Length: 472
Image (cartoon, rainbow, N blue to C red; front, side, top):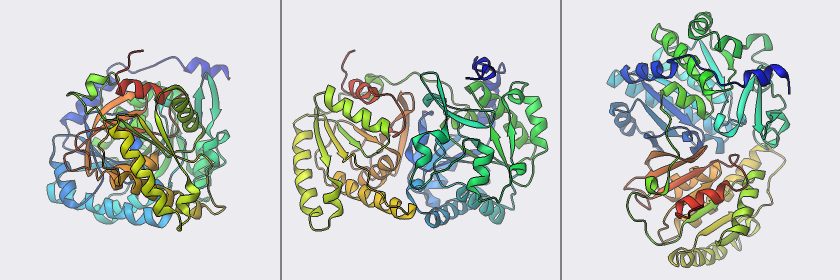
């Protein structure tokens, strides 16, 4: 490890920056709208609503609420490029229309993956074009901020790292860079922008805010921001919340003077920019404020990244659970899928009614195609069958854990009919607890959104222990 990086690891903050950001947000009429490409982006916030539909009626309610921030779950990471283009234009158009009708301005955060997977630059390009068409608003810059400290994602000298056990691994040297749909070769984020835009942005077009600049303070950052124009891509380095807090203060002040910015970020920036205070991790009594049903909990594991498989295996081997492996091959075979699903549903209903902790997981062999569009279609087809399975479960579980971004989104919207939920907080770092609303399949139960790439081997066990009130 380079000595200068080790030296920079000391926590730093500009005194009062976090509090000043909160004051700006609370006193402003402006709404902060987070477009989340899977449900895991709420993993740093609490007391915030998340919408799974974006009709003008629903958006109007959100704009007129007292909350300065709300999420819209797009689940666009599971879509094709053309699908996400259409989707983002529709959402941005509706937001602009409601904004005009209610005379309430808004800022957009395009929240995506801390390991650089997702539809960039399509989503930011469509948002920028729609804002220009609908509101004659031209962005001076779009900021790329993939830091997610709760899971060890940090950016230094324009290189994005995953930090585990004091080992700093450039993100392009991890399994995430080999993603069948969103793979990439560059861990230097300026070069990543050039790669992802197929050269539409050249290396010299990309700018960066260094750790040195951040730690000179908000006034120095504001001076830098004044020189940005023409939707310049800007990498924001960050090693701690202090770095993001001072940056957030600077951009809020710049926006109040007329600068216009778009944000492509992971979850940590959402918390910082919105001025959301820290909150303790949720306990059993925080989550279950009345006596829960004595039926079993339901755990659904769809993610295939290595850490998800480790967590699943640890849970099954160390905790008394009733597990059901979904044979993906049988699901993809039209001659067996229907009968296979019916039998599974019957067994799962019995397990939950009996009070067993019930685990459903897709077989661990990843089925994919050489073509990235076909790989996405296979993933979506498998997810659709899992949704059909969960929709068919009649027994109401005590809680539901969904492991994996696409899995948790599809289960929330298509299986549980969640139109809106309240983000209660986090049960462990990076793992959010939603409380479903009264119109969902299971009203007012805890829905735990567990990203596939978050946690250690025993994190899933720890979450189940909390939800089942087992003392450690």
